[in-house]
Image (cartoon, rainbow, N blue to C red; front, side, top):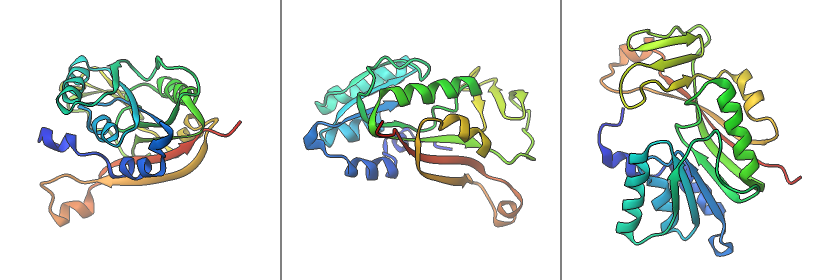
Amino acid sequence: MVKNIEEWKIPDGEVMRLSYLLNKEKQQKIFDLGCGLGRHVIYLARKGFQVSGTDISERAVEFTNNWLKKEKLNADIKKGTFLSINQPDNSFDLVIALNVIYHGFKKDIIQGFSEVLRILKPRGIFYGTLKTKHKDELFDNQGIEIIDNQTIILKEGIEANVPHFFSYKEDLIDFFRGFEIDKITYCEYYYPPLLLEAFMKKLGSGYFHFTIKKPSN
């Protein structure tokens, strides 16, 4: 778990890679869905892209806008959610949503993917992450409310009362409807303290990292 706020300012490597595939000279536009403290907003604005973004947290939006002001950079950052993105159709070359779009019930996530598809330009890219777990893996009910075998709600912390959905492969059929799949990577993360013996017995926190595209027509 990240405890140092400075770690939240480091951009994701895949976001950096994807930005190199875009042509900033053509004024290509990027949308950061759930921008958090603004690590990708700042990085991409420094690279010369037109950047917009939202976050559900007023505090996160304020932090990002203050950081932009300090760096003398411009970006359009406002409060918002993935259920209804206040942007025109066919507007963005790249949308990113890291550790964001699984914060809802399945119907909400389907709506979120639909909104991203709407605002992407044809051939636009959507890069994001989804939580997952093994089907036989049981939730530890300490500190959480279990809604079903794929959905929990945290009882405390900064994400208290927020649903968390754990996707299976079958769910991606519903989420990715209308998109072309470029790449899906499965990752498990293990956090210290962790001895090798415990590592061999324990399942890590699982995530799908996906890169999908809006078709040409």
